[in-house]
Image (cartoon, rainbow, N blue to C red; front, side):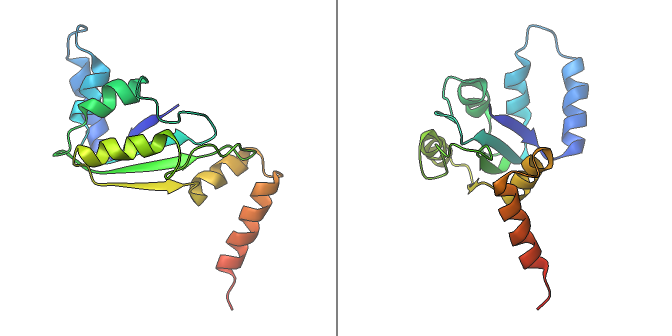
Amino acid sequence: MPLLCVTSGHWRTHWLATCSMISSGVDKKTLFAEMACGNITVLLNGSIVNAFNRLSMFGSVELDSLNPQKVNYINIEVVTNLEGPHLESCSRGSIVELLQILQSRGFCWTCTDNDQTLMILQCIQDPKHPSCRTCANSLVESFTVK
């Protein structure tokens, strides 16, 4: 399930205050995306088919409502479950379609597969998973003074 996050706490406070004054007839999800500005991070589950789904709320409403003149950068983070499967990535599957849409609309973007920080967050819940041991070993090696 994709998650749209806006990184500015000030913006979020402004949005909440604005939304409370809007009549209930307005589609608040469209408004949320239309008001998005700055840098945006989208998390996509690379362990499912169609991690990016054009028919989802993000794919059909929020993505189309984002304004490339207000949004500086879109950071796509593709995260797979620790146990897999590894079905989609920045270069494979439905995420390629998302990147093509972003490019055609004039957005600046990056796409990262299995960011180490996000893997560490998964390992907090399952520290004995073999992938977490590998991750921990590589962290120790990177911080070891030689």
